[in-house]
Length: 412
Ligand SMILES: *Cc1c(COP(=O)(O)O)cnc(C)c1O
Image 1: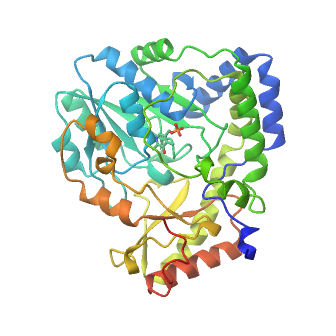
Image 2 (image 1 turned 90 degrees about the vertical axis):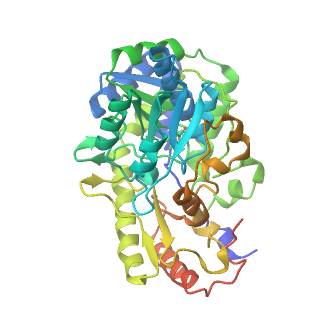
Image 3 (image 1 turned 90 degrees about the horizontal axis):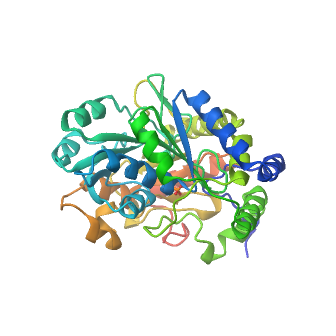
């Protein structure tokens, strides 16, 4: 066993503190008040008229899609980026809808507008746009395109809570918006989703779909145990333990359309309310790690980092990069699990086997495939230290030069 077993950075971490857990426990006694106070805080902070809470981000996404479907029952296809979290197609299928896809631009992860335009049909219920890794994209041109074709725009800011574009906050730029409170996101409440909208008709549909959850004792125990684990185990001196238990599936992205949709219970609403007060500080911390990483990575010349678009204020959930030469030496992404350096989603959505029966059409999405093959992501969270940054940058440089032996990276 080498020393790195004892210090291990998780790929992402939004820490929970004992005081957050106390706030969650206090909210159990008055769940309605905790839910209402979290909704009010979100309405205020993000300047939207309606907020609904869901048991997970997937559940919130599915509820938003169902609400849109009630308004346009003749439309049943949802247009997704071909490279994104597997939670996104899971939610579409769970909502009983079909998936169609558009490609992305490799330098910015913004939609390839030609690909998007080509995939829009009279059956398109909505276009989902994702601000991946906390880098906001400009939804202005998408909004125009959607309006012209009668489709809605879903602003999936599950990875970009607090990011903005030209002064507009991610999550508030479409007909419906989403934040996720699951473990790897900007802030966490163990699990949970936040759905935002200014449209009364959508809000009405949302409350019909997301009836509030009562207190379920076993679920509460599970959430409490998870919250305590998140408070303790995301620390670099403890993370090797959960990371070494394969059944926890830490960090894996899974396509699974079988999940429950419901509201958020009082415990997690209380937890989220407490963490929300720290969101800006969490984002500022990630930004400063990202700025430091970007400055050093630039001196390498052998990796290409994602450039924020003009007027974008990213929140840098993780720092994505590609090899300058187009592919990694030895054809494998150089991961370093001990430093939280891991590849991103391993497949473009069109290549997920279980999703094939639900795809509305066939198409080619070469950039999404290139991203799935090559995108490497570095951690930006609170536990990343100066020495970690230096180690990550030096490792990236050696990988690009082909100096890292196959195997030492601990790839898949
Ligand atoms: C995480 C995520 C979601 C929601 O996922 P949950 O894990 O269910 O909270 C939705 N969209 C994107 C882009 C995500 O990264």
